[in-house]
Amino acid sequence: MLRNALGKTFRFLGYTVQYGCIAHCAFEYLGGIVVCSGPSMEPTIQNSDIVFSENLSRHFYCIRKGDIVIVKSPNDPKSNICKRVIGLEGDKVCTSNPSDFLKSHSYVPKGHVWLEGDNLRNSTDSRCYGPVPYGLIRGRICLKIWPLNDFGFLRASPNGHRFLDD
Image 1 (cartoon, rainbow, N blue to C red):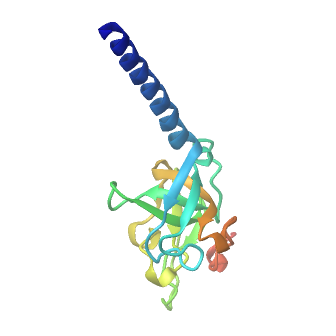
Image 2 (image 1 turned 90 degrees about the vertical axis):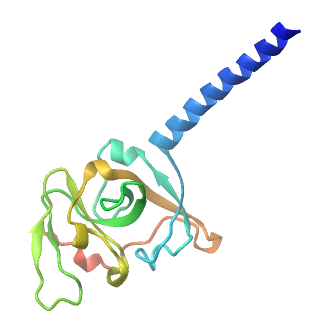
Image 3 (image 1 turned 90 degrees about the horizontal axis):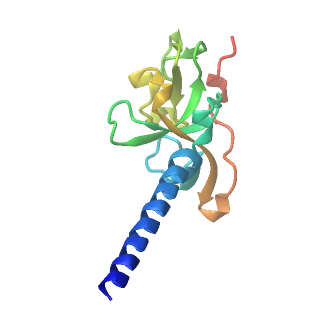
């Protein structure tokens, strides 16, 4: 009787550990569901929108300009932020705010990306904390799940003019 109960308990624990490892690998390497908060990505992503973030792109260095990514915050490593990639290493980017009369430019250093929110007037991004190391990227958002009337792939940036190609 005791042997039977112990056997079932250890079997249950074994399955729990196995499924826990599978779940961890799925969320770490494949992707997961993310609830976005804050106004920095409006109008593309609204506060409380639910999106799917895939993580394979960061592992295979397939992040491109225009992608929306989930990144560990350079200011607070305990939180994640959602921003759009404006520049990759070696790209020339506009480092000033849209309202600045004189525009300043800089180059993104090796191993870094330049991130900005779509809502330029209400976003804390690379214009504040500079280029972000590629290693802080957690995943690429590829699909909006909620609200259902907005379900689908994400639209292009309303600030496409900020992508410099020279």
